Length: 365
Ligand SMILES: Cc1cc2nc3c(=O)[nH]c(=O)nc-3n(C[C@H](O)[C@H](O)[C@H](O)COP(=O)(O)O)c2cc1C
Image 1 (cartoon, rainbow, N blue to C red):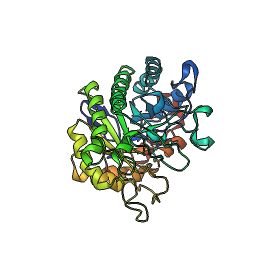
Image 2 (cartoon, rainbow, N blue to C red):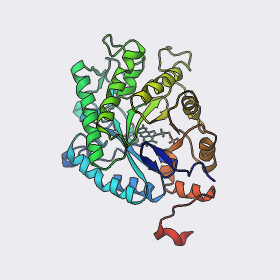
Image 3 (cartoon, helix red, strand yellow):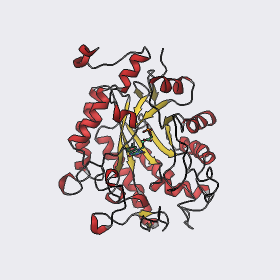
Image 4 (cartoon, rainbow, N blue to C red):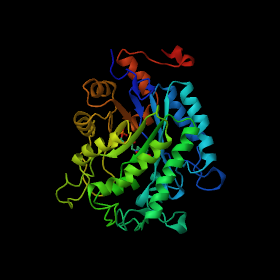
């Protein structure tokens, strides 16, 4: 019996196994014209291949709720109906092949308007095809990033509404999970952390104020997402500032995450996808196999919220142990699934579980 290949039911949605694909930007949409921010053949084949490979749940890359919420000019978006329609072909294929399609709804905040990572990921000025990034406070992410424009309360309200509109379109496009991207130092994470949020209104200062924007987004998404389908929230469990004592000790911490997980559960979030980092450029992060799993485990043991673990999970037995030992309810794989789209059914075979090798491939086994 494999714990990794036990289905997981959240609300009324049953996810066939616990090997999930982490959201990963492809920076491969058109950056202008009618295909702007719209899924194309690259996104189809990229996501479809992981469904063919038996991945239980597949999350799209960070999909921008507004044009200025893109990380790069080539990001996917879901701020218009044409973008939603283009996703329909993908969600249909994923479901037909037994995977659950999920979308990560995102706004890049002060880290918006950067070049594609393989071109260095540098900030792009408006004259080079970039735009003015927005953030909770006029504080740049790094010396090379521009100072973001501080969001007005009116713009905050518009951004919350943009998340709701995006969720409504995602549902129409056939997605069954909506994940709110609150991690990695993008807009929602920027509000959470005192490192990036220095507001003096009711969106900054105390824990309640810094978490207000995230909760408003969750409430807005939950209000349009059906009762029977789950909402996830991706968090950076820590900015790694307090773990790096030479840095200013003003970050979001694991204790904050545990507390916030309780709040998110009360606001209808069904699973916390536990990542870390991304809000401070120079912190040292002790990466290694499963290095973020202890954060997921802490949330799971101290709250009643289901969790996903992510980060350097690359082997079937490692993934099996994380789920079997109760450290997480599911694992999300990023780079390993880029290397090997067939990870899930190969892992199933290795673990002696039911392997959903697609019929047209049966002669290979
Ligand atoms: C190419 C690439 C793109 C990524 N894009 C996103 C993203 O859009 N949203 C997000 O939350 N994380 C993103 N990440 C982080 C991954 O989801 C994952 O958390 C990270 O890669 C660690 O998992 P891994 O060690 O299995 O790759 C990205 C990672 C990679 C490698």
